[in-house]
Image (cartoon, rainbow, N blue to C red; front, side, top):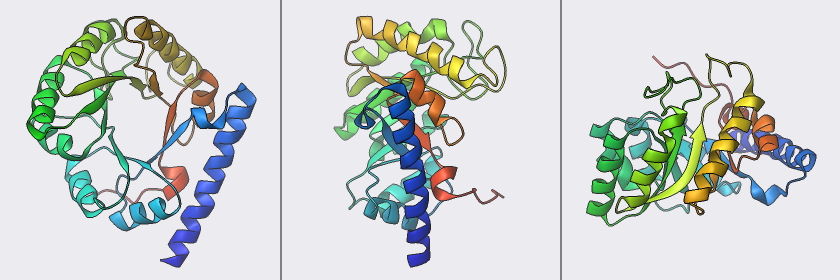
Length: 239
């Protein structure tokens, strides 16, 4: 366990240095960027070590892995982010432990999340996932609503009991005009964020950037970066 803690501490220090350097280069304060460690495929013991090392935001993308892990770490002061594509039949479970759902991309999901949050007496922060590779009216290959659907979905979240509109999230697309152009993709997301805040001033979260491209996200203005591999190591193969 000590070896694992030393490894995670060293990795966290490297990621912290990358974020700090990116903030300095962009003329931003380090406090403006929140690190979310994506703990998918890793055990609850790693989450506990990360908490000891000062991490307070963790993310998961599969409810069947996240639910037992969140329960095992219920005594820790953590903010749990759900970042994966979410099916409505998993909503009740996710709403019981997630503090932030970053992958809201359709009205049916808003309705289900609202009902679950109200049932549990909880309030969930929701981010609209934007698919920069999606045509009008379609969803992206990795989830997300097409850009022209942002405002309608945001209004639905803002009006839904038990939900708060937190802002926007994206995953750098693998296809379309922004494929391989992370900085351009993140700049575009920031444009959408500025427009959204015109009607929803409190929706100021912008979640973008992962292990390979966090610098581009920070340069563009992201408020949250989602880092997994750079902290936890190369993920074990999933059978």
